[in-house]
Structures are given as C-alpha cells and as structure tokens.
Amino acid sequence: MLSLGLVAVLVLWACDDNAQTRRIVEGRWGGDDIQIEVVGGKTLIRLACADGQIDGLIRLDDDGRFSVTGTIALGPVVRESAEAIYEGQVVGDTLTVTIRLLDTDEELGTFAAVFDREVVLIQCR
Image 1 (cartoon, one colour):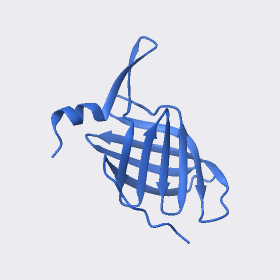
Image 2 (tube, rainbow, N blue to C red):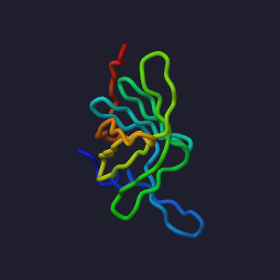
Image 3 (cartoon, helix red, strand yellow):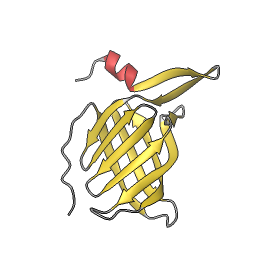
Image 4 (tube, one colour):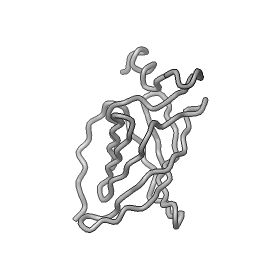
C-alpha cells in the first residue's frame, strides 16, 4: 500500500514562470505491455513492438489529464519513426495513456502503468 507521502509526490508541483504547474513525476512506470521512464525532461515509452519518446515535461491539467505529441517507432527491426499523440490521465499512482498515430489517427492502444513498478516486456520478432 502506498503511503500518503508517496502519493503526494506522484504528481509533482513545480514553479514555472510564476505559475504553479503540475507534471508527471520522474521515475519508472510499469504495466501490462508498457514501460514508461520519465527522466531529464523527456519521457521514454516502451511497448512490446514499439518505442516512443516525448520531449519536454508532460504538464497535467487540474484533473491530471494530458495531451502531448511525440514520436513512436513501430516494428521489430527496420523502424521508421512516426508522430504520435499521447493522451491520458494520472490518478494516484496510476498513469493511463492512449497512443494514436498523428497522420492516420490509428489508435495503437490504451495502457495503464503504475509508478515504481518494474516490468519485463517480451519483444516482438
């Protein structure tokens, strides 16, 4: 069970241009078929058969929701990068994200990840 102190840091408050801004806390988030690592101002997303990246901080609205663009590389070997939209919400220690390709609007899936949960992804072949 998470302590109240840990839940309080999962959504980090920071001062930014004299306004309070909520953002996703740095660290690892893991779930079924997804691993997310927020580090150094960028977010790395690993799926079984894709890798994504979001540059910059992911800012949250008052309800913990976000919508940002990034890139995603699909496939096991030869991988072309495509622009993607990452939309979701952080509630407590759980981050839920839906990933869509920007050019085709194809939804790649909705995934849930828990803060500080390690996962082992089985890579596609």
